[in-house]
Amino acid sequence: MLICGVDEAGRGPLVGSVFAAAVILPDVHSIVGLADSKKLSEKQRDKLAVQIMSQSVAWAVASATATEIDQLNILQATMLAMSRAVTALSVLPDEVLVDGNRTPILNIPSRAIIKGDATEQCISAASILAKVNRDAEAYALDLLYPEYGFAKHKGYGTALHLKALKEFGPIPEHRVSFAPVRAAFAQRILFE
Image 1: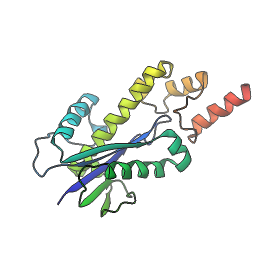
Image 2 (image 1 turned 45 degrees about the horizontal axis):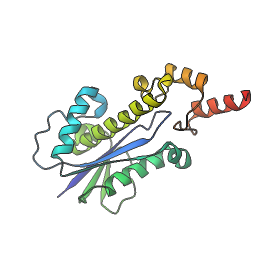
Image 3 (image 1 turned 60 degrees about the horizontal axis):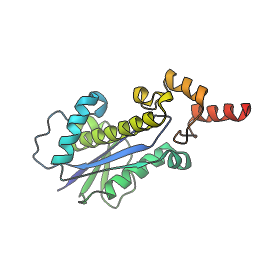
Image 4 (image 1 turned 60 degrees about the vertical axis):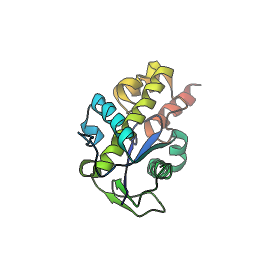
């Protein structure tokens, strides 16, 4: 029976896409150290991601853009990214295990498991791939917009990010439906 783990990364940031990954691990593998991606260092995640991609039966990463997040809301955009990841798999699983308390609408039996990224290896693997891809987007945005410090805060609403948002205004990749970005847009309009 092929079990697929699904998890997301990037629900909280003020900028960029929300990412989801789907991973089917083989019954036997040599990947050591799988855990919730938030409990691992960036170096550990990067190393594990390579092993996950090379040893998985199948894996896929998908996203929903900032525009889709603004149109749908963050929860629905997350579900969209998750369903995209599952449908992008080269092999269809028999069951999908999703980290959290709800599952996207799929044509495959699925179960939500709260804190599944700490208890199910396939979900841990998905958590790692989603986070690595989400961070890669933050680094790419940092190259385009170095004044925002995305490499440091990954788009979360830190003091540094909020200061840059106030000083430079939102970029096209900012999530307008998130309050600090909406406020920055309103401030820009007031002073133009």
